[in-house]
Amino acid sequence: MTAQKMPVIPPARTRVAPSPTGDPHVGTAYQAVFDLAWARATGGAFVLRIEDTDRAREVEGSEAQIYDCLDWLGLTPDEGPRTGGPVGPYRQSERLDLYRRYAEELVAAGHAYHCWCTPERLADLRAEQAAAKTAKTGYDRCCLGLTRDERARMPGFAETPVIRMLVPDDAPGEFTDLIRGDVKTPFPDDQVILKADGFPTYHLAVVVDDHLMGITTAVRGEEWISSTPKHLLLYRWLGWTPPAFAHMPLLRNADKSKISKRKNPAARLAWFREAGYLPEALVNFLELLAYPGVHPDTEVQTFAEFMGAFDWAKVNTTGPIFDLTKLDWLNGAHIRALADDDLAARIIAYWDETGQTFPATGRLDPARVVREAVPIMKERLTTLADAYPMIDFLLAPDDDLTLEDEALAGLPGDTTDALDAAVTALAGVDDFTAEAVQQALRTALVEGLSLKPKVAFAPVRVAITGRRVSPPLFESMAILGRDACLARLLALRAKTVVTPS
RNA sequence: GGCCCCGUUGUGUAGCGGUCCAGCACGCGGCCCUCUCAAGGCUGAAACGGCGGUUCGAAUCCGCUCGGGGCUACCA
Image 1 (tube, rainbow, N blue to C red):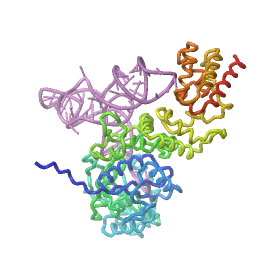
Image 2: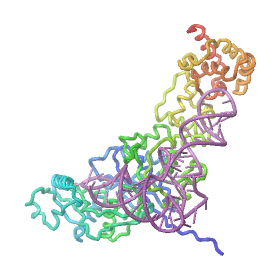
Image 3: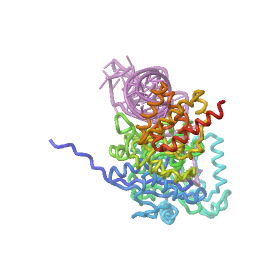
């Protein structure tokens, strides 16, 4: 009896292929997570290819932003325009001669043809078809079989032709998807594959590049299902073997439409970094949107755990609503899992990135305060952005602490006794630790003045933090030190006496 | 309009013909803990879109229907 043999999975090459149209989209990361998981799980490679074939939509600096986001998320490609690789160039705009060559090859073989129709003629054609509500739509093959001169004598003629696929009657009607199994597809129309400007359309470029780059698994959004037969046709004509396809479900806005930057600020990948989310939490969240958690009782997981049990058949087919509620919890969970030093470093880095400024006290070093405050912040943080407002009172000058109206209003009418007792008690504390401070205050206020703890510490909290709600009081006081605490206690006492209203 | 994809609590999911009067996570309610707030523990409410089949038996299979989404560009 031998152990059951694991099936041998060859190393997969996957790619993510964003367009450089400005801020990277969250969908890019979503797909990249699955791309990387599969590439790593099989010992293959993850490739970044820039799909810059639409010159009208290109935005300067996009490529750097794409790399920034992928690096931040820990989804750095193995090959791409920055690092290079064996099958470059990795920008489609640098591969134009390749696309033209294959397009002309297809024309020569009778699988494609030139089309001189003007955009206006095509628009009119579409409008007619839409108005007639006819079942048959798509290009009418007006130019098929015509020479340039013949076509030039007809209306709607453009000087520079495009190249269209000549879709045969036996075009593929289905294919097998890694996620969905057998999928039926619409009958394609005579798609343009090479535009008048010499650039390829997505359809030609993706086939040529995936083949030439050795991509074995093409992960892409569900919106591509209906154009898959066009790609299959191209593979057939070119004599190439198509990759395995994995069509991911589409992320959606709250109204269930395809996620868009307009309807959802979080559709911008950079938004998460700006909002103080941890990259590992976002990755964990994206995994969960299309895949069951790997643990039975918690959904907090590492990328390695996700990757370890990866199976395309377990990827979901329904498009999830992109609801950040769970991400908030996940982010807190990942923050709590961080070592104190690591968390402190991330908070400081976040402040650097967001240009956080500090009051000039000259007394406290923000980095030191953060490090000391991490233990009391850790289980209270949802995002890194919560850190500063949570401990700003520790960094404020003692004589310029903001006492919130709401906090003052919540105090009992006369707090002078409690504040006086607190001052006296603290003056006698030698070693100003949280434990010692607590002990002294309990003795003086709870026992000495017979106050309930809740009532007793309220004025002290307001005096020290300026707020009704704060991180743990005694630990905060220990970080501030005795002098600062006494100054703040006295300040509130003075304020109370002067303005008894 | 045509074609394609999808449909389990508020959200994300488990479920692959009986063990499901449907499990888990987040969120929400309550209780406990407690210096406030959290975190943590316990606990509660909350779903198989509908209708017909198949079957001894259906969330699971089939059909229809309704609903949502995508595509239908010289955009990706």
